[in-house]
Image (cartoon, rainbow, N blue to C red):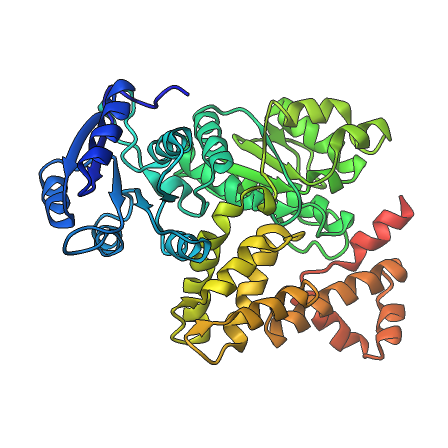
Length: 458
């Protein structure tokens, strides 16, 4: 494997074993890296103060302060500096605990040379100090929401960053819950359009009658209930990025209109006589097999080739298991604050349970499991029993009562209007509500009965 930026990368080795230092130095210098050596944590910190490296490789057992203590200080003062720890006495719980606290790599001596070199290349690839042509320093903030340390995610992000610099349409593939919108937002932040809006819409979560108005907007009087003109999300994304999640669920009638927008770089709101120019970069995502959908006549081939100029595929969570402890720790920090509990982490056997679980629901399921654990724990350290309990529970979004009630109300109203073809009197009668109250509910969720009537009449 070719070294990344080998002519400039500076690596610090901290180990009191002279043979280990000499061996590592010879191997790294042979690959073109610049190497500095230290025999203790204090000497290592002094070296870092004088000449900050791109990567630190440290033994855990050092004279005076140990390697984990050194890491804790570096993680606090230089959070973007990756640290790989070496130990002669490692166990799986130790490794899980170390990586959950942010250690980039944890290898047991005697370590495999190829494994170590691969970890070094990964660390240099995603480190915030990655050198760029012209001496420009990379800014890691663009992918701060993508928590990872796995090789597959590092390679995916390298591709994503390169693609972000163009204006090409990107199709993001991946199973539900893998984080397609998170990646789309990262691409937007790394693009030339980062200063513009990022507008996201889930094509599978909105009824067809509403999706058309949401995307393209409408003029006043376009349909009954359209009392004022309203811009659509395509117009709202002008100058920025439009992200269409679950594009495979978009109805064929709207696929034609979206294709026209992409071809003409203009959008015509419902009821309008003229189109309006728009400048958008389109990102889309799907968990469906679009090639199979095309073969079945459910997705337009011409639109597919407009969307899939280039594609990125997010791996399943069980294909990036080394990311699980880091993701769990990240979610724990978020949710601990939400629930107002002083949660310090997971017990080692709890982390091992997380790292070895099946995860059919991917990252979204992991978040839900961590949230259930946070909500139920009565101790600062989450035990394995709570993790196992959450893993056995049916997958569901952890919503507040009000959020769940609002989601149910909106879905219920949409189903009623579809059932009655937009007849408010019939819908109110089924719901056992008077028409005035029913209209208030429709206004609350921005539902126009005429849209449902128009669909049936057409």
